[in-house]
Image (tube, rainbow, N blue to C red; front, side, top):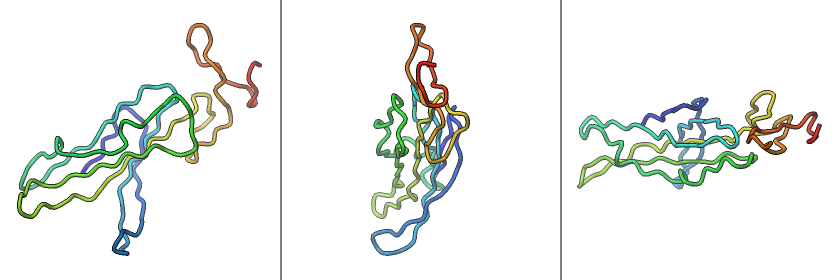
Amino acid sequence: MTVLEGAYTSELGKVERYNADGELETILVMRTYVEQFDVYVDPGVLVWDNEDGNLTTSVQSEGKGLVKTDAVISRPFTIKYNVDDLDAFDPKSAPEVRRQVFILNPCRETPQEDGVTEEIHCSRDDSNVIVCSQNSICGL
């Protein structure tokens, strides 16, 4: 499975965890960064199988509709992608891949991995422009 970046700033990573059988497994993770109030459209994944060809339309995703950009939160939204091949008698699953969507403060000085920002969003003015704080104080 290939995780697509779309129009967002993204970086590829991995997480390791123990599965239900006690085996260490590595999960591919695309970290995607979206500014607060931007519209998020999941770019999805591409899947190619040597026997079945393009399986992209067979991908099942979990968590895609839960991404909200109206507030900066400390944890990313997680989307999981899974797919099985088309073998009716012995289907095989591709390794799960994930996307973590971080909502970034539009007033930040620099993006930080933990979601902590130096400045905060205070409001939108009459022309719908985001008004940022100064030294974390609104109204200056």
